Length: 571
Image (cartoon, rainbow, N blue to C red; front, side, top):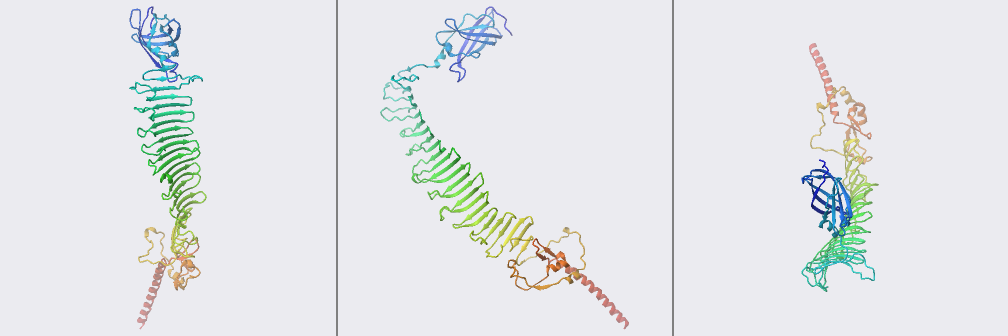
C-alpha cells in the first residue's frame, strides 16, 4: 500500500557492500548494496511502496552525489536498494575524509542524522595503486609506470617474488617469479621451486617475453635437460609452436606448428631419433594449395613417401613414392581436377626409362575415359572412351588377343589368335536392334549368327507349344509347292567371301530367292538383305505334301481295284 506521510521516521542501516558494475565500468563506476529498516511514528515496521532519494556528503556537508529511486519495496520495515544503479557512482566520490549518506522518503525532509559510510565504500580507491611500492623481506617491487626522462635514472618496471625462506636478498638469490619491462622488452619469468644460485646457469621453468618484433613463450625441460626448451611458442613474421622431445639431441622441435606469411600454415612431426628422420608435414599456402607429406630416410637422405595435395585449380591428388629411391619417383598417383580431368596412375618402380606408367585410369573432357595397363614397353590393356582392347598397342590393325567393348551398341568382342584379314571370333551386342550374338562376325544380323559349321551332340529344337499359337489353318497345295521347289547341287563361292568361311565341298540345298516365290514363310532377310532358308520348317510342307500324295494314291488304288473287280465279273 502507499505509505501515509509521517512526521518522524526511523531508519536503521543493516548492510553496506561494494561491488563493480562490469569489466568496462569497474574503473569508474561502483554499486553499493544498501539495506535499511523503516518504521512509523509508533515504531511499527512499514510495509508498502515509496520513493526514496539518496545523497552522499563529505565531512563538510557538501553533496558529492545523489540519485532517486521512485519505487522502493518495503516489507515489514525492511528494504534494499542498489546505490549507483540509477545515477553513476564514480569511486572519486570517496576520495578524502569521511562521507555520510543522507536518505529522504517521499517528499519528507531528509532523515537525521545522516549515516556514516565506513570501510566498504572507502576501499574503492584501493583498486588503484599509484606510485612505488617496496616491501621487505619478501620483496615486492613495483616501479613507476611513467617512463623516465633521461638523464634521470630509468629503472625498469619490475615485479619480483623471492623464495619465502630466503633471508639474504642479495643478488646471489634468484627470484622465483619475475615480471620485467624495459624500453624494448617485456618479460614474465617463472623459475623452478629450487632456483639456482648465480653465477650458475639459471634456466627458467617458464618464460614469456615480448620485444618490438618478436614474441615468445618458452617452457623449459626440467633438470638435467633444462638447457633446452620443452615447448616454445614464437610469434614474429613466422608464427611457430615447437614441442621438444626430452631425450633427443636435435635442436629442432619434434612437433612444429607454424604459419609463414609467404608459405602459409603448416604442421610438421619429426622423429625423436635424428638418425631416422621420419617426418610428417601438413601445410597450406595462402594462395591456393594445401598438402600433407610423409618423409622417410635418415636426415641427410630424407625423401617423400606419401603426399596429399589440394589445389584450387588442379583439384586434389594423392601421390605414393617409391621407398627404394630418393629421386622423387612416383609409385602411384591419384588426381582429380575440378575443371575436367581426373586420373589414377601406377608406376613400375624398376622399368626403363624410369617412371614409366604401369597402369592408368583417367577421365579427360576432350578424350573421355581411359584405362590402360602397360608392360615395360607398351600397353596390353586399353579402354578409351568406352572402347576396351586387350593386346599390344603397336599392332594397330588386328591386335593379338583383343577384348573390345564399344559404347554405342554396348558391344563385346573377343578375338583369338587372329591374323590379318580375319574377323573377330565372338561378338555380343545389345542395342536398338536388340540383343545379338555372333561367331565369326563382329556385326551379327540376327539374334545368333554363326559363320561356319554347327555341331550339337544333343537335340536342337524350336519352340512349338500350342499355347503360343493362333490363326491355325490347315496347309493347302503342299504337294504342288514341293513340286515347284527345286533341289540343287552347288558349291559356295568361298574364295570370293573368305570371311564367310564357306566349306569347299559340294553342297545340296535350295535357292532362297526361288523358295521365297513359292513358300515365302521359309525365307528370312536380315538388315543387310542377306537371305536364308529355314530348312527345319520345310518339314511341315513335306508332311502335308506326302499326305496329299497319299490321298491321290488311295484314290487311284481304289479305282484300280474297282476296274479289276469288273474285269473278273465279266469273265
